[in-house]
Length: 313
Ligand code: PXL
Image 1 (cartoon, rainbow, N blue to C red):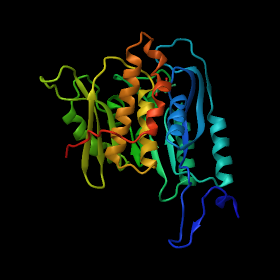
Image 2 (cartoon, protein in one colour):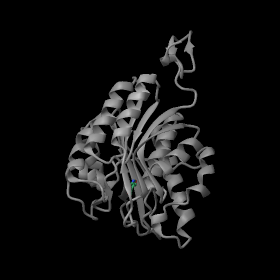
Image 3 (cartoon, protein in one colour):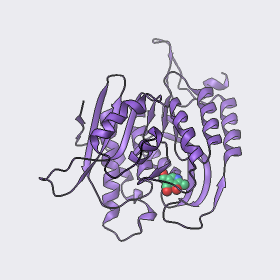
Image 4 (cartoon, rainbow, N blue to C red):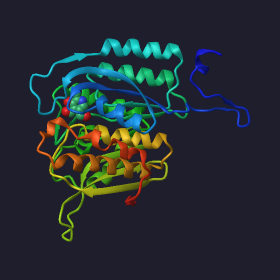
């Protein structure tokens, strides 16, 4: 047995193909923020709850995430990332997905690209959450140089999950609160032209519906393979919790790896994120503490009970 064989389930003699890891395995490349429920402290419990193995590569270690906290401390992990990637590559580990989130520099994007080039098989899913900002603003450590590099970095992904602010940054379009659903539908193929076959944009305001008591927000997804656009809408809740994008993308990755279709995976990710926000909103906790993940993690074990996805095009 060579190193390559060490972590695959076996060789299926009848179909003559290598069987994937029996527990799907994800290289989760994101920062480790000690307090505030974001990035790896969200991705790891979610993936584990979905019976997916998360193997973390921390891009930075921070005392807290950067939204709503001052004087946070941060250690850059670029050198560690390079060493970790070369160790894993030399071990011949196989990954069913590479899922990258918050990166601290353009150099880190090069390291992730090299890692993907070294380990990617035909069926390896590469997901990039191009974490850069929200509400029209970049997060503290994100520089203009990183925004520029992100535009080529997303080219290696099969699937990207920008929020509406990040979609505008990727396309170099001005951000405004007036960006509407039709504008985002027009953006989707342009984002896909940057490389990824599947583009999922979150936090899209839904058209006003006078019959409804609350505003709606939605997730729109484009699949280049069949040129279809999917939408999952939910009631808008007037609070911004850092880490909700990480929860959404983590459930999406877990769900796809467990075999769900794209619209069902979107549904599951929207339902989970909405439930987590609702579980938190009734309390008077500062939004910077993040969503009360611990209260809702067990729902990831149940099948999707009600699905609400729509085909837009
Ligand atoms: O995905 C949100 C996020 C991740 N990582 C860091 C952050 C934030 C948002 O504030 O600051 C370090």
